[in-house]
Amino acid sequence: MKILKAKDYSDLSRKAANLISAQILMKPHCVLGLATGSTPIGTYKQLVDAYNQGDLDFSEVTTVNLDEYKGLPKENDQSYYYFMNDHLFSKVNIDKSRTFLPDGTEEDSDKACRQYNDIIHSLGGVDLQLLGLGHNGHIGFNEPGTAFEKETHCVTLSERTIKANMRFFVSENDVPRQAYTMGIKTIMSAHKIVVVVSGADKADIVKEAFFGPVTPQVPASILQLHNDVTVVADEAALSKCTELI
Ligand code: F6R
Image 1 (tube, rainbow, N blue to C red):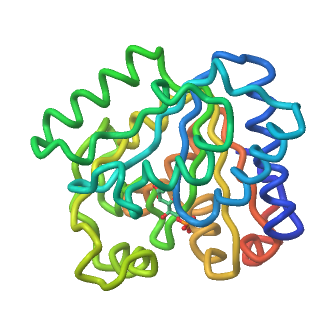
Image 2: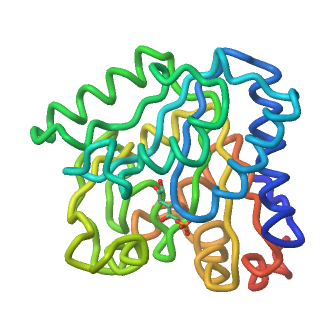
């Protein structure tokens, strides 16, 4: 596991975008695994800037996102599709028919998850997976206690995650209670993984996840066993591991 120390959030965003740009330049028809949440927003902005400057071409890129709320259609402004379209897809020359997320409108969970697994397998897997890190160590919507061997599955969100996501909704009651998410097995199958983490409020979980024991109680800890993970974190997020890196 490589740790890239960034000075601050904008430096982190630039470093993470550089890793993604390198992937696209090396393999223009790559499959990118993408994440939502607040941390990657700066990374997407950097990618859009690079595209606008003529340095990046998304025309052959395919994307698969980590997760989507169950029950939210693409048009809902809190859906993860809407987020991706807003921050990246609508701003670059990507072919929208090659941007995949789990189908939040599919009520049959088994069917939705099977279809999404089939898409990922038919693409031949993910070249580079971008991840954020939840305060409880979740990656995607894989909450503490999730079995490591799961592929795409339906999850019931923990109270803490519902509260953390509440900031994006009018009220807590509007936050969907379930989501479809790539499983840890799917995430671990990516050839390369880039984790972006920012802020002092993530310092404890960074130490626990990347320097503590590997346990399903801290889902991100499994990343220690992947052979190509780069954690791009700012000084605040790394403030509790200074003696370890
Ligand atoms: C997003 C996702 C989540 C977030 C995590 C961190 O698609 O799957 O696991 O990456 O909750 O979110 P932020 O970046 O908002 O702290």
